[in-house]
Length: 481
Image (cartoon, rainbow, N blue to C red; front, side, top):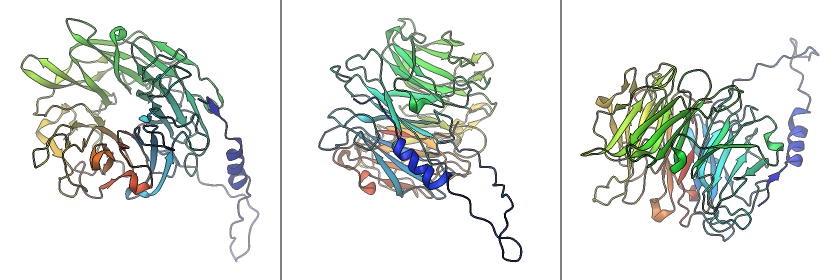
C-alpha cells in the first residue's frame, strides 16, 4: 500500500483562497474607510474533537464491513459534523482508501474503519482522525493491519493523510484494531498507542508528522502483556499533567488471570516502568478512564467476568492518586452483564459518568441482542448506584425502535457535539436493519443523557454504502484534549 501522500496542491489552494487574501478595509465614522490596522480578535481555543475547528465536536463512524468499489469488507469511515443542535447529517464526509489523498487502495477484507479515535497529533488546533484497518495486508503478509491519520483542517479534512504499520508485520495481527490517543509527553500534540498481541506500539505526535514517510515507533511489552495485551486507554491517573497509558493483559497469571497496569507519561514520553500493576481475576473486556470523583485525576473503571465466585460480572473503579491507582472499589449497584463503555461528564457537574453498554439486552418480544445502556452518574465518592438508569431505543424521546440483533451499544463514544459543555453519546448499533447498521446520538443535559434532540442515522442517510456495512461498528469522538 502507499505509505504517504503529500497534499501540496490542496495546501496551495487553501493559501490562495484564504491566507493570502488581503483583509477588507473596515468602515470609518462618516461612511469612509480607514487605513488603520485592524487587530482581529484572538481565536478561540480549539474544542476537543473539532476536526474543522468551527467550535463543535464532530463524530467519526466506522463501517469496516462496507463494500467499496466492489470490494467486500474494504471498509469506510463517515465523518458527521457537529452543530448547535448536535450532530446533523446535512453536512458529512465519506473517507475510504479510494478517497483522494488517502494512502492505499480499497481491497476485500481491509476493514478500514475497524477502529476510530480522535486527537490533535500535529498540534495545529485541528483534531485529526486516527483510523485502524485491522485487515490490511502489508505486502504478502495477510491481515497484518495498519493505521491511517487523516489530518483535520479548516472546512474539514482534505487530502492530507499518512499511513503506518508494524515495521515487522505479523499475519493476522490486526494492528490498528485497538488504539487510543493521549499526550504522553505534554507537548501539546497527541500521541498514538496501538495494542497488538503482546506489544504496545507508540507513535509520538509531531508538528511535521504529515511530512514523515515512516513515523518512528516505540514498542514494548506492558505489565503482564507477555501472554497477550488487551484493551488500552489514556488518562492522567496521577494528575501530573502527562497522560498515562492504562493497559490490561488477560490470563497472564494462573493466580490472578489478568493484570491492570499504568505506564506513566513524562517529558520524554511513556515510561516502561509501571506506577501501578494490579492482579485481577479474569481481567475484563474493556477499560475506561475519566475523572469520576472530580479531584483532577482520572479514575479507571474495568469490567471483570467470573470475578468473585458466584458473581458472574463485576465493575471495579480504581481511583487515581498521586502515586497511581488506589484500591479497587466494586460497583455496588445491579448492572446486567456488559462492559465499561465510556466515562464522560454527561450532566456538566464536574464528575465523569459511567455508561455501560448491555448489548445482549432483549427487546419487548424477547429477542436477544437488541442492546441497552446503563448510565451511572459520578460523584465525589465514586459511582452513584442509586441514580443509575437505563436507556434504550424505546426510551421516551430517543429516536428509533428497540429490535432484536440491533447490537445497540456495541460501540460507544462521547463528544460535545453541540458545544454546551456537556458530553453527548454516540452509540453504534451495527446490527440494525439487517446489518446495514445505524448510530444513535443522545445529547447530554443537566439531568444526564435524554431523548431530547436525539437522532438515529444510517449510511443511507449519508449516501454511503449500505449492504451489510455494519455501520457503527466503531465510533470516534472525544471530550478531552
